[in-house]
Each structure stands twice: as C-alpha cells, then as structure tokens.
Image 1 (tube, helix red, strand yellow):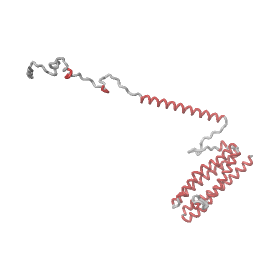
Image 2 (cartoon, one colour; image 1 turned 180 degrees about the vertical axis):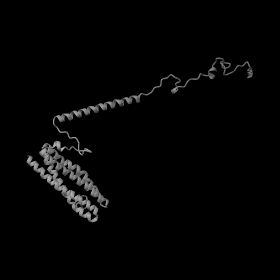
Image 3 (cartoon, one colour; image 1 turned 60 degrees about the horizontal axis):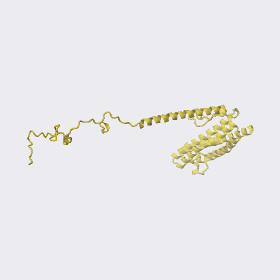
Image 4 (cartoon, one colour; image 1 turned 30 degrees about the vertical axis):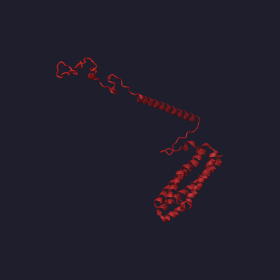
Amino acid sequence: MYRDPNPFDEGADDNAFSNGGGRGGAGGSNSQFQFRPAEPVGFGGGGNRDAAVDIPLDNVNGSNGKDSELSQWQADLKRREADIKRREEALKSAGVPMEDKNWPPFFPVIHHDIANEIPANAQRLQYLAFASWLGIVLCLVWNFIAVIVCWIRGGDSKLFFLATIYGMLGIPLSYLMWYRPLYRAMRTDSALSFGWFFLCYMLHIGFCIIAAIAPPIVFRGKSLTGILAAIDTFSDNALVGIFYFVGFALFSLETVVSIWVLQRVYMYFRGHK
C-alpha cells in the first residue's frame, strides 16, 4: 500500500540544496541542481584570461609597403635628375646651346638672349625685330581694351569675342611664326629660317594694314581699332572714338616699323650671303 510521506517529517531530508541532492544521494538528480563555479568571462567568450588576441597586421604591412614605394620613387627621381644633368653637361660640352626660359624676368615663358646668342653685327637688327614683336603685342592688347570700352558703352558682345580671339591667337602666333624663326636664322644662319620669316612677316604686315584701316567687313569693322571704325564710333561716343583713334595710331606705327624691319632683314640676308 502506498504511503504518502509526511512533508513535515524530520527524517525526510529532501533538501534539494544539500550535497546529497535529496533521497537519491549522489544519484542522477544531483546534476539537475548542481551549482558550477563562476568562470571569468574573457574577450570572445572563451573564458580564458590568458588567451592571446589576434591583431591583424594588414595596416602595419600596408604602411611598410607605402614607405617602400615612397623610397623607391625618391630614388628613381634622383636617378632621373642625375641623368638630366648628365645630358645637359654633355650638350654644353658639345657646343649645343641650351634654351632656358629667361624672359620676361618676372615670369619667364620664352628663351631670349640676344646679347649672348646673336652675332654682334646682327644684334641691333634683332633688337629692332623684337621691338616690332612687342609692338604687335601692344596693338592687340590696346585693341582688346578699346573693344571692351565699346562693348560697355553699348556695343555688340560679338566684338568682344573677336577682339579676344585676335589677342589670344595673334600674340603667340606672331612669336612662333615669324619672330622665333628670325631669331633662329640670325643665330644659326639658316636660309630656310630666313625664308619662313619673310613669308610669315609679310602676312603680319598685311594684317597690320587691315587693322589700321578696319574695313566694314565683319561687324562693321569695330572689332579692330582702325581709322574707319574710329570715325564711326567717335560720332556716337567721343570716349570710345578716342580709344579707337589711339588704336589706329598704334597699328599704323606698327605697319611702318614692320616694313622697315622687313627691308633691313632682307638687306642683311642678301649682303650676308
């Protein structure tokens, strides 16, 4: 017959928290209520204080690689500089002139050394040609300023763009097409360079004549400060007309000087040959 044990019976040691674990003693019920000692919690949940932490070395390796590339680049740069210096010294020893940019002094953009590179008997003529080139530069710059004044006073905006094109193309082309060939011809005594100069310089003189007249071909001729444009603008606005008359004087003077330079260079070429 089944007998229900008295829960208040002192003999019944059913303390679940005792070492015996109830009636079962060291039986299977012990594992159900057994306490485990506290374990330290480490990084990564491994529970081991002394466990090594793996740190990726990609950043360190990448830094070392960049330092190595920088050192290699610096060494290559030094090698190239030494090679360039060696070539320059070889050219100088061979008598080949070096064209370092030295003009204008405040912002060198071209090589220009008449005193040391042009023969003494041709230096004065070369200076005259240089003055002619500076003259066309002044003419185109003043033409640009005069057209801006005309535009501000109510002129057509297309005139401004044409004057800008004249200046941006005329100045470098005049240097490359006829002044630089003359400089080279005086220095090396090249007949081919002289011939190229004569051809391009005659085109330059033709442009100066057209600019001094300013015929009403494109936009009534007001994109160039010639005599016809000066008369036309002076009747509308005296200030603009004055700017145009100054431009006309500059283009006229440039035409006369250019014709004189052409004659002198031709006489030098024929007499020198």
